[in-house]
Image (cartoon, rainbow, N blue to C red; front, side):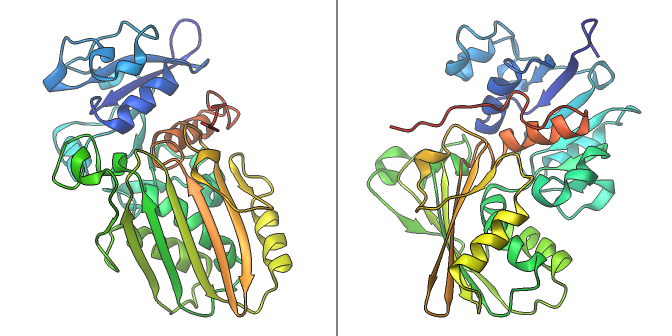
Length: 325
């Protein structure tokens, strides 16, 4: 802790989109002081030289060194696989809490707790190590897990979800280049997206008898941020029964809400909210779910987890305004 009682935070992998959003939240968080933001390639440059939206918020510079014993919580924002490599080269000081935004420990190996507060709030609050969920995984699980918790999954689940270009990360590539992505939509990793692993893990924890397929079609959207997932499955519940089930499941959730009307991305972009809508069409139960992939799908949820780990109110530093128009 700092002399004024604030949590001291460090960030590894500070140049990417998720790190940029994390810094934006933490520099305005009333209970946090940033100790270091590590980026070898940007060492000595101001944070706002990479994350230009931080102009006027901080004059802090990137560091090419770090002292893990100088901070209370460490956020790992590097690419998938790099967290494992980081711990192969570094020792975690006693008492250091870690929130990993990569997928390395989402299977809860090495003592990590899966960081979806809607199902693991108490475990997160007592954890030293938290594995932050994936963005698609967050959006889809919030639409799916109330059914699993009630033992109501009896048929295949079909999901189509569209994501913004920031979900692919800051490094440019053929499918993130503006001239290709703009005015364009495409399917990728059909039926084999890596987030299915963590989704299946938690579904089976809540409903061990579920033995059907979860069919997932991910779609690249021609917008920057946000995810809309549409999920349907056979169900004998009415729309009213399903809505009541979901509202009861999320009655204590800080950021997850069930809407009476159809959902859209502008309700959640730039916030840590997830908003769901429920419909019944014949035998099909349709659940639509929207999140900001960089906030509730990544950095906002990471701060939500940090708040729980340090005994802070869950919404601290996360009262963010949606881009309504």
